[in-house]
Amino acid sequence: MDTAEALALFDDQLRRNAPPESPTTRIDKGAGVVRQVGAGAHEWCGVAWSDLDEATADAAVAAQLEWLRGPEAAGREFEWKTYSHDRPADLGMRLRAAGFEPADPETLMVAEISEVAALTRGAELPAGVRLEPVVDAAGVDLAATVHEQAFGTSAERLRARMLDQVRDRADTVSIVVAMAGDVPVCSARMEFVPGTAFAGLWGGGTVREWRGKGIYRALVAHRARIAAARGYRYLQVDASDDSRPILGRLGFSALSVTTPYLITAPA
Image (cartoon, rainbow, N blue to C red; front, side, top):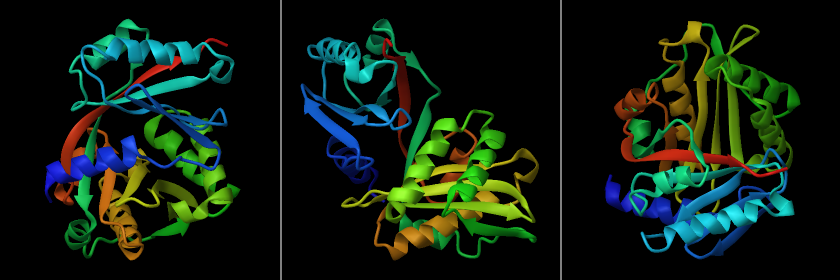
């Protein structure tokens, strides 16, 4: 894979010209910044892309803070999603100075689906574990439960997001839960971005006692097959430190480091 080409395509298709995440999402472009604004409180709201330099960055940050003081943003969490290849190089410092707080960084990893398919050929679930597609609220609850157990964080907003997806735009998402008998032990989803070369892998959380048994690898293989059948070229992941080495063995390359900078608008 040509990593420079893949990164340029990622920036163009999933950041600068990204389609709205949902039917109720609005995209605002201007002054070197692309902002997405979801209508619901659980929908993503923030800066997806910026093209700034030392002379323009502070004004762009100030413009977002001004928007956050308006009635549309009242009380909402706002994320400026930065990447290590963004400019200026001190953008993160400028955001912190403006009141944004950094969350944990993750590694942007991308792979050619054909290579992932080749490297995961034969990947199987352990005995007694099966995959169940998530198609309704009951399945969403199982997936959210796994997320909370695997990552130790609330899945309240994720649950609302997944409910919207399976109800209103099932053609853009594939969510599965790995079940051991009646117990959910892993969940993962894939989001298709229409009109682009990318399908995104999200979640992939396994409860602690079931880790190291090949479930995560099997779910990557499962999603790669689905994405290939739908004609996508790349898989994209924001990888944690735990998943990065596994994904590296499955054909993924690290292209950048992404750090969310968060702020809550005044109520």
